Image 1 (cartoon, rainbow, N blue to C red):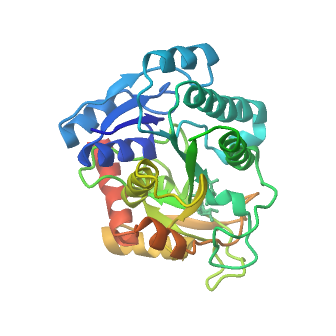
Image 2: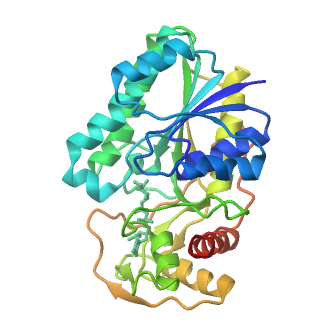
Length: 339
Ligand code: UFG
């Protein structure tokens, strides 16, 4: 049985990934410091899969604790590293907290991989590395441009740290998956996104507004150079995203990678505007969203969506779930949270 270490495995994308790996027959070990997730997620994973993953609670940016962990636990076929802070706005306010947490944890993991000959790493990267691309859809060959936020910069620097470490370490290899906008929840509605406090992201804000927790959704800008004036993103169902980690892991484990550091765009290949999201949500749920047009949000780019040709061909992976599926599952998750 292949064994996977999932850092940040009680978080949003991590928990959905843990489910897919268990269902694919992997033994799953999770590390999380629960700074942005709840311990109950482990029971939820067990409810869905019948298996409760082994769990270690500590902070991966703690050098000693991480070294101790690897000394006792070393036989992983692959490590998937999700654990990181991810709020763009907060990162502008607290850059050192972001650099320290996101980069130290990565370096500690790479050290463990070097020390104990763990060969395969999947890294959670982001389309934020492309900034506002000149050409759309954006391919993996698009230039990496200066990050707009410390959060985005941690993703760029992390890719460089991985690249340099791989170049100096025999047998170490990695795939960075550059996520577009993950949304939705598992069909069981037992796991999903759990934002603490006021959500920053569009979909949790939408579901909380419809649920009456927030009064009104602000649509940030309707004067962009897009067909309806609102900003465009590539929204991918979190379960499809989770499955991309599975194929990427299998690629590394079976040595099918072409180079020792590969990057893939993980999106749907479709762009949708904020207004399209609102309209589709209303259609599939039959609920009305109370919204108003507000000024643009600082730091937002106008539009980005993925060219997924390379990921589709090389990974043999493509999305299976629609935007409607994703939005409906988000709403079902919100309803479950309130029940
Ligand atoms: N939006 C609104 N109102 C809201 C929230 C968002 O109109 O209340 C708009 C945004 O302006 C944007 C779109 O909805 O046009 C999507 O916004 P999100 O905050 O959901 O997502 P972003 O594209 O801004 O950010 C996401 C991740 C980041 C990551 C970034 C690029 O949340 O972590 O993609 O990778 F950095």
